Structures are given as structure tokens and as C-alpha cells.
Image 1: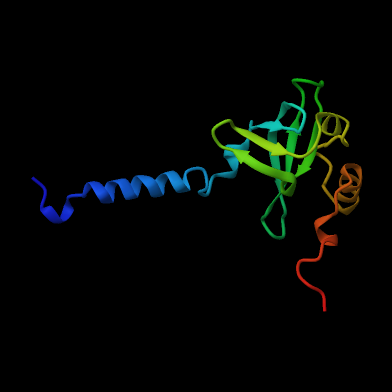
Image 2: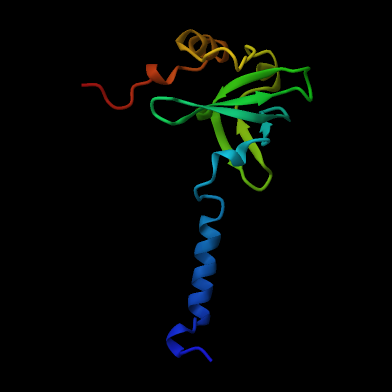
Length: 141
């Protein structure tokens, strides 16, 4: 029999289970986990995350590579990770406020071509989204 100091009271066990329910889905996950997540666009669920691109200076996940080959032959495009509103860990989806059509006709991503300033500008212009470098981080005095 274990010493009394190692026994867990029912109140402590319930408190621990409550804390686990609170943090469920909010803890750090591997970036690899999002591979194959479906894209939950604002009009349907389609395509999947095939890969991601990491900024080589900040090591920040910058883009998701979205593969739509199940809907379109061999088409891949990029979505800025900041446009993902939510990752649903249970349903394995990435929710974005973009339409299926926007993603379908987005500029084609070629993994052999570098993602440089011109490609980024073209991507943000296409989606009509401000480029993060153009958004002030804090108040300007």
C-alpha cells in the first residue's frame, strides 16, 4: 500500500481533470501534425495541407502549401499561416476566411521556385490581404 502522502484525494483528482479539460487543444503541437489537414474554407471543406514553408530568418511558419489535386489536377498554392483562423485538432482542419474559388485560382506554387519578395507581393495582392511587413506592429509616434 502506498504511503498516505502519495494518495490523491478525490477533490485533487477532479481539479486535475478540470485543468486538463481547460487546456485540451491549446497546447503546443508539432508542425508536422498539420500535414494532411483539410482546408475549411468559408464555403466548403476541400484540399489539404501538403507542406509548409518556414521563414529562414525568423524560423516562423510562414505559409501552408495547399494541395487541391483531389479537386484539380496537380494544383498547389500558398496560404499565409496568419490567415488560418483556427486549427481544429479533432476534425484535422485548418479554418480560413477564403473561398474555395479563391484558393483554386490562386497563383500556382512551384516548390522549385524560391518564395521571394516578388512572389510574396503577388500572393498578397491576389488575395487582397495586407503584407505583414506593411502592417505596423505598434503605435507610431
